[in-house]
Length: 264
Image (tube, one colour):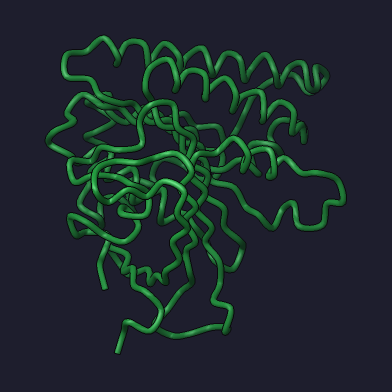
């Protein structure tokens, strides 16, 4: 059993991340899929802390687009995990974009949403370009919470969402970034046509699925993670092309990861 506070846990091993907070650079897209009954938000929180807390990566930046919660929500959770987002924000290492109340003329419809999204992308591009010029720069991370709410905010246009992901992906490739997105799989469960989810899964180098236990509810196990790593391979612990499955339990200030049957 390993907690998310340990130097090396099952999730990081499955992702192919190393102990200095690295791994996951080089134009990679990481997709987190969850369900209403099994939230995968804790994975976002873990990755935020990981990217900001490494002493070996002092100039790396997290660009965070939130369609789900205000800044105070993430700050409160990360403080419990030992990471002060307020300080990181002041130091311009955590760049937060509040997307909860997108403001564009309703009469402009999808065109207005597209113009606003291009404006946001321009700001992200400028931030990443500035960070990449700093001495000791390794990677920036672009995070989106979450894609399903982003689609709602953009007049229900999945095309705009996918266009934006392609923009971010090209930016990540150019500046050696990692793009991390959270999406609710339930949203597309009743669709008869190929869903945006399938296209995102195709683009993603790593897919993490947070699901309830197949056997039902358990008091000491909150769900299971399935990690498909298509795009990272580092050192002897190569994770490329592997599928990992393990259970998790979310605690007050950390998450425990363990293989089925390993707890007594």
